[in-house]
Length: 90
Image 1 (cartoon, one colour):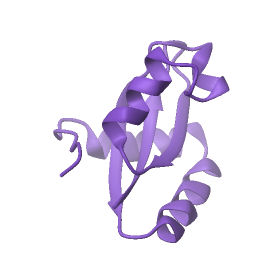
Image 2: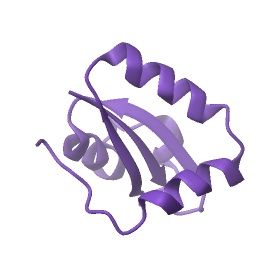
Image 3: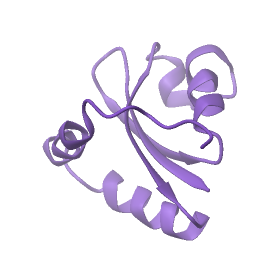
Image 4: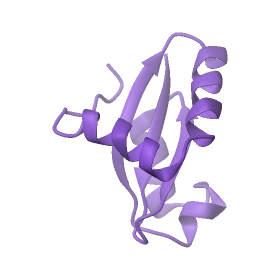
């Protein structure tokens, strides 16, 4: 199972990515050099959206689509997710 996720960085910017292990990846973004260069300078980051996909291909297509959206459009997606419990390694 692949996860598409959006993180809110300390400077209020948004970062989108995909991973197999959501919990591990968020830890990497916050505490490790293995996190993205973008988030390394913008710690701490917080998970604000996540969605499961069966294949890497579908997750990558959705990641690409979301990355092309404006900040306002991304915030609409995040707002719909707000209040839901994030899922980790279900």
